[in-house]
Amino acid sequence: MQTITLTRPDDWHVHLRDGAALRAVAPFTARQFGRGLIMPNLATPVVSADDALAYYRRIQAALPEASRFEPYLTLYLTEHTATTEVRRVAEDPRLLALKLYPAGATTHSAAGVRDLHRIYPILETMQTHDVPLLVHGEVTDPAVDIFDREKVFIERHLQPLTHHFPALRVVLEHVTTREGVDFVRAAGPKVAATLTAHHLLYNRNSLLAGGIRPHYYCLPVLKREEHRKALVAAATSGDPAFFLGTDTAPHARSAKESACGCAGCFTAHAALELYAEAFEAAGALDKLEGFAAHYGADFYRLPRNRDTVTLHKNRWRVPESIDFGEDRLIPFRAGDYLEWQLA
Ligand code: NCD
Ligand code: ZN
Image 1 (cartoon, rainbow, N blue to C red):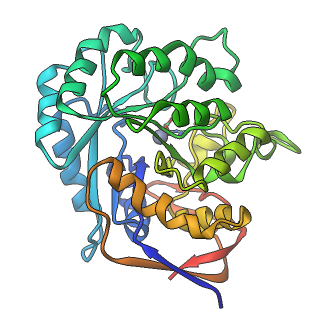
Image 2 (tube, rainbow, N blue to C red):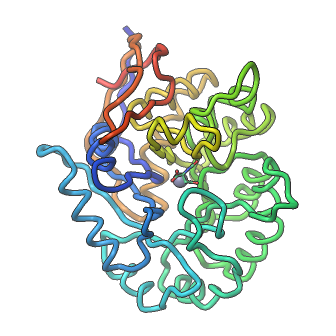
C-alpha cells in the first residue's frame, strides 16, 4: 500500500456557516486540518472584531470535544468599515485578515464593496498595520462575460490596487485563470493566491457537458481546460505564492438542486484526498506538503504545524449525502470512489 505522510495541512479559505449547518460541517474541516481561515460571508456578515470573536466562540462550541483545530477569523469589508477594526485585527491573534467581496459577486455579498476607492483609506491602514487583504477577484459588471470576470477584475482593479499599495499583503482567493496565475507570479512576495481542489481537478465541461450539474457550480465558475492546466502548474511548481484554500462552501441540497442554484462546492469531507488526486495526476505528490502545509502558514507568519497526517492509497466511496440540519448536504463526488484516504 502506498502512503504519504506530511506536516498537518491548514485550510486558508473555509466557509463554516452558522447554527445547525456549522455544527454539521465543522467536524469535517477539523478532522483534516490544523487551522482554518474562516470566511465572513454569513447571512448577517461578520463586519466587526466583536462579531468575529462571537463567531469564533460559536465555532469553538461546534467542534468535537477532542479537536485541536484552530479557527482564524476574517472581517467582511464594507464601505463603512472603520479603521479601528483594522487595528483590532492587527492586535488580536485570532483575527488574521479582511475580506473584500465586490457587491453582488457571490453568496451573501450584497453588503460588499461597490466602489473600491471608497475603501482606499482602510487599505492604507491595513498596509500600515501589515494586515492582509483577501480578495474575491471578480467584477460584477453585467456587461462582462462570467468566464472573464476574474481576468477583468485583475486588469481593472487588482493591478491598480497592488500598484497603489505595494506593501499590502494580498491574497487572490480561489484563483481560477491563467491570467490570475500570471498576475500572482509577476507581483512579488506580498501577493499570493489560494487554489481549490475542484478547480485543480475539473474544467467547465464537468459543469455543463451532458447535463447541467449543480454540484459543480461554484464561484468563480469552473473555466476552460487551459486554465485548469495553468492552476495545476502553479500549485505543483513549489512557488510559495500558491497555497491551499478549499473554498468548501456548503449549501443545502434543495438550494443547489434548484432552478436558480446556489454557488459553492462542499469538499471538506475529502479535501486532502482530492488535492492528492490532483497532485498525483500531475506526477507531483512530492510538492503537496509545501502547498498544503507550509506556504500558507509562512505567508500568514504563523508557525508550521508540528504534527503530521497520513494518506493511504485505499479506495473508498464518498457518501451520497450528509446530515445538514433540517436538510441534506451533497458532498463533492457523492457516491463516487476516491483512491486516496486520510488515515
Ligand atoms: C461561496 C459561498 O457559498 O459562501 N461560494 C462559492 O461558490 N465559492 C462564496 C465564495 O467564496 O465565492
Ligand atoms: Zn469562498
